[in-house]
Each structure stands twice: as C-alpha cells, then as structure tokens.
Length: 606
Ligand code: M6R
Image (cartoon, rainbow, N blue to C red):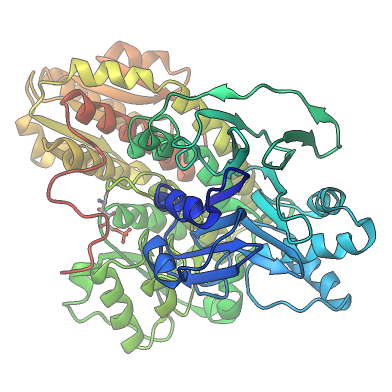
C-alpha cells in the first residue's frame, strides 16, 4: 500500500520536519522501510518505520522542499537499498503501486547504460524519466513521456534537482491527494498528513498529473489537456482521513475486497491459455510437478482459507491435501517426505505456530511454500518459495481482505498445479474468466452493505449464533462464526450443515438464530433440507442465497443475495456478507471492531 508525502513551500518551514512529522500519520499504510529526500541535503533511507528514520536524519538535514515515503514491500525485500526514494541522476521519486512491465523497461534501460542498485520496480521509473530528460530537457515533458510507457499502477511524487521548488505528482490506480496551502503545496497518499497544514485538498483521478510549486498547482491529463477542478474543503480529522472516511479500518478493509482481488491477480493469469503465471514458484516448478501430497499449515482465518484450498486443490489439481493447525502440526509426528509440499498461509508471515510448522516441514525434507501478505516476513524468508498476496497492510485485528486474497492465491495455485497435471485448458480458462469477473461482483455485494446494519439491529439481542454451510462453504461458516465472536464477544459456532443432526440442532429454539449459506451449487438441495429442519424447531434463519432465488425467501426469515459464480470461487463472494454482518453487529453493540479485547494482530508467541 505504501505512504507518500511531499512538500514544497516558501514560508520558511523546514521541509524535513514537515515530512517526518507527516509520515507518522501514514504509518498505518506501511512500516517496513522509510526514506526522505531533499535537494539540499540528499537521501536517507532505512529499514523500519519513522522512528528509525528520525534516528538517522542528522540535525543539520533540511530543505525547502522534499519527498518522503513509508514502504509496504511488493517487489524486493524490505531493505535499505529497496526503500524509497529511488533516484537516477537528478531525478528522485517515491511510489505506491506496482510497475508491471518493469522487467522489459529495465532491459531497455540497461542497454542504454543505466545501472540499477535495487530490486525495486520503482527505480525503473526514475531511470526512465532521466533517460527522457536527456532529450526533452523539460522535467514535465520527460515525466509525461515516461508515465506513458509504464504499465501497472502508480501514485508518485517526483522531484528534479535542477528545479528544486517543483514537484510532480501522478496517479494511476493508487491514490494521490494534493494539499493546497498558502505559499505551500503538498502531495500525499491520503489527506492525513496534510490536514494540519491546510483543509483544502484536490484528489487526483487516474491518468492525471499535477505540477506543483510553492505558489501554483496545475493538473493535466496524460494527454497534456489541462484539468479545471476546484479544490474541496475537508473537515475530516487525521484519523478519519487514514480510514478513507470510513468509521473503522475493518470496514475500510472489507470495502477493499474488489481492489484486493485485482492486486492479487495482477500479472498472474494467462486467461487464453487457462494458466497461472506465478513468478514466485518458477524456481521450484519441477519439484511441484512431482509432489504427491500437500499439507497446508495455518492458524485462525488463514486456516479456514486453507480448508477451502483443500477442496479446490483436490477437485481441480487432483492432489491429496491435508490442512493442519500450526499449533497441532508442530507437536505431533507428521510423516513427510520430499514428495510432500508444506504450504504455510499467513497474513503477517510472523505467526509463531505457522512458522514452527514450516520449520518442522523443512526438518523432515518437505518442500516448503508460503502464501504470505507481509513481504520479507519470517515465513516468506524461511520457505523455499511462495506467492505474495499483495493485499496491502491489514490493520483491523479481524482479518478480512487478507482472507479474500488468500482464496485468490489458492485459486491461482490450483490452476498452476492443476495445469501441470490433468486440468484441461477449458477448465483453466473457465476459472480464469470467473476470477476476472469477481471484482465487479464483489462491488455489487458491498453496495448492499446497509442491509447488514438492519440485520445486526434485528438480531442484536441474540446471545448465540450458528453459521452453517457445506462443501466449499463449510469453512466459510467457520470464518463467519470466528468474525462474530472475535469482535462482538458473543457465542458463535460454525458447523458443517450436514452435522446439525449429529448434535448441534438440539440447541435450536426461537432465540437461537442461524446464518445459513445456501447459494446455488452442487449441495444446494441438501442445504435447503437443513434450513427446513431449523425452521421446524422455530429457529430464526438468515439465508445467504444466489441472486434470483425467490423460493428460498419463502423459507427464510431474512435473505441476503450474492451474484452467481463458480462453486469453487463462491467463498470469495459469500464471506463478505458475513464480515459485514459481524462488523455491524459489533458496532451496534457499541464495540470498537478494530480493537477487540484480548487479541493481537499477529500472534508471535505460543
Ligand atoms: O497473520 P496470520 O494470518 O498468520 O494470522 C493467523 C491468525 O492469527 C489470524 O487469522 C486471526 O485468527 C485473526 N484474528 C482472525 O480474524
């Protein structure tokens, strides 16, 4: 996700102080490395967050303008050399996003004599602008030319030592907001660092570029046409700005699901061939073609993602899969060999039980792989290979967007391993096509979020809640229950719908509601029977159904509709209503969903 902040002013303020203070309010966007540049004092970078950077900035470091950055790594480990700002000659910049064609651009630039110091995709952009500057002799023109060559996403702030008062900002897929002050201008990834200087802001749209000096700001389209748009006055607090105007990080992160799907998929599908291209697995592709068994290890929400992965991989890649809690795996004596792959799923990449399970796998000679969100985390480093989620930092303790990205990564794994085996091109294409359609469908689900506020009110006195589902949606029921209990502290249980008659149905009465997942799939009829059984015991039932299913509405007390998708991908749509339900339920109880009692975001102890 990364945080960008840039300043130019003529009011005698010290840019270094403005930038370092501003970075603090962006820390929620990234905290694995930080850096600052002013034309007068040069660049300083470090692994770690703002406190680390402050320690390294000498007292005499200053400037009238400058750029600064907090990184959440995507390409390249979170090291000093990969930290931003990146520079080439007189051009320096900070970037949020992913430059997809960085490899081909790098090749071209190398033939022109450019030497690169980092593994970062961002450094390419600095070199590209410098290359164009040789001919164009104009900072603006060179930047426009370079931006037109770049594919992918960016929010950037760029500075040229030859015109130190000038800053250029540009946006394509990653947010950029300009702060319009008196005799000073700002660029940031969200308004939080700007608000204590000015409330006047201008949000850039995709494909727009802004040129700022202390006294002026001009916005262009990439086609050079001038954009006439008035700044707006924001009355947000800095905290509201970090949350993008949402009341809590949890809601903001649930709302990011469509974007997360795009980011996890970016550059990894070859739809026409029905294949997945996973750069992180290339080095072990041969070993993967020969593995006979997979063991997925994870904890909490990541474990439930793993259970869904088991269904996907067994059905479509034909590989036997077992899913184990990290905390159990490490204490028994699992039988593994070189034909076993241990896949660790972890948002933080630091969960101790999952990490120890990876180490156990290694000790026993298995191939270890990671599906990890935090780049450079311990699990990412200790596994033999893996796939990053690219979901951006998840701040809410209750994991939401990471779960969605874990399921996307597992679907990509399934295509990758399936196509190495028996999966047909046709099946690969179908999955790829439907994966691409998910962001729009998720937007539709999220557009109906106000419904959940109503349900949360209606069921607010429930002391217990049951969540049921079958097959791919059995683990989704577990996840729905986990979300509700961890942020609203009421008793919630997830059950396989088929297990109801083996015990849990004894609890059902008019005060014990159930959330039943009964979207149209291969087990739909069975789920409908289970809902009948609940209704016969007077249990209130909210049903999660497929759009257009009018019949189920007659049976249910309440219905939530989601669009149709492939059965294997249905958990990606179905989990979002459950996340929203838990969120509004906790909020309705006056609880803060971002700070559940007794819980930490990352469990690095046993
Ligand atoms: O960082 P990890 O994905 O390894 O974390 C695993 C669990 O601790 C985590 O999913 C936890 O269950 C969340 N609080 C669930 O919302």
